[in-house]
Length: 618
Image (cartoon, rainbow, N blue to C red; front, side, top):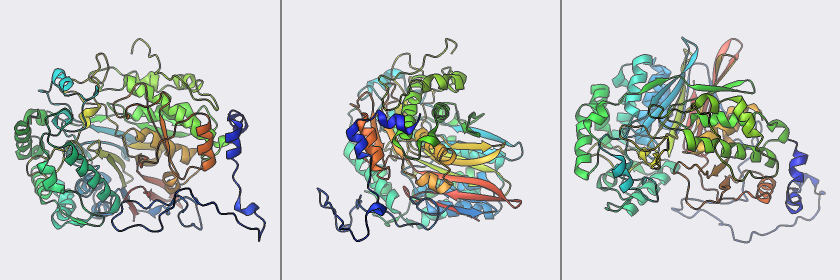
């Protein structure tokens, strides 16, 4: 599809809007006309204001690299780490320098993030990972996804439904936390340091306290305000108790405000000394059971004891010479692969970076893949997913034929299967060549709003993503794993690791991962610029998993970051895309990329400006 044919499909008025005057075209000395904005722009950021929005101002200029990049990637020969908090990244590098493996460093970083970034991480949530095992030279996957309580029946779940879906808060949304067992299982196979050593940085931080960075502080305040608003009500969607959460976080810290969590430090000490069993069978498990019994929930010691992470073989597809891997199981990892399979049928490079035709094709690929996501994805222990068919190039070619230039596909439906058939991401690499891509989450916001007595962490609300529709593969059942949005990313090239990467943010994750691969592969951006590039995020599907806002039009809602060219935005609006606000829902990214230089392996690592993260290498 060529740019000329796409533009021809756009109404003339919009095509005229796509022409922007270049400052270089103005004659030197000519008068400059300044158009004042309709709404006065704020002259300064008031004290205490969360935001200072000046769309007329852009970041400073860089002398090299992409003009929109926020910084350079970092490079090192011995190891690298990229997380969503500088102190977690420092902890990971410290573990590597002590002789720990990439897995050791990732566990230590994740434990730190449970304290430092409670809006996205914690031992009340689940965890997934893919890693490059240099001994067998393969990508290995692990799924740490907990199951629903056995005492919670479908009838009870339906009785607590809100607008046909499970609510986002309270005990009804809590499934068994799988993160800690995932850490333990990874350490048993790949750990070098003692288990207890991995918790020392997090314990020290939680006991001493830290200053909370801007974005994390902002989201803690939003979450706590939401919990206080929902309150401990007996109505559907309410939270059984909020006192423990308020005891732990209060109303949330100010930007740069002091915060400590001695309860979590004590919990970590029990885990450091007692291992996995302290959480799933010992004192922590019994505290959890007693808490849910007190508030009228369903989680028991038996539910916790029976949980175990599962090793899994990742799915894969080839995209323009790069092998992209994704977890199957009960995740949306296959969705990234489906989007890339569809996009391989189009000349994205010829369309141009951030052009309307390129974004239009990418968005349509998303819509098609998400129809299948909502229709077929579920716990494979309960439902057979037609994975091979969904991931096939033949099926992708059929779906690609539905995409037309300058026209939105309406209606859009899932394929007909053959008859047989808020999150934190981080990555670490070590001197042995092991690379781990790891993602962990409490799901929406900080989670369910529930904190067990004296434990200092919040339980996830992942159970909200179960379906309540009869016949749906993801329908709720006791002891079943809900559909998962969290997916680590990994790509290899010529049989060697190429990228350990991830983009956080619920349904944004496959959309973000696809944009990273397209930016690297089709548009030649480096690992830092690929993440800093402005993103799009589309919401809406006829096969919703319950995360879409109500009342969306059949074509959904398209969000564009302000960095997307104005001409591109105008062209997309002209063909009918309905624009939503720039709401911050564009995900957050970390990445590590190895390359060889004069016989030496060098790790390049990147983070981004949308979060408080940091990449380091040494």
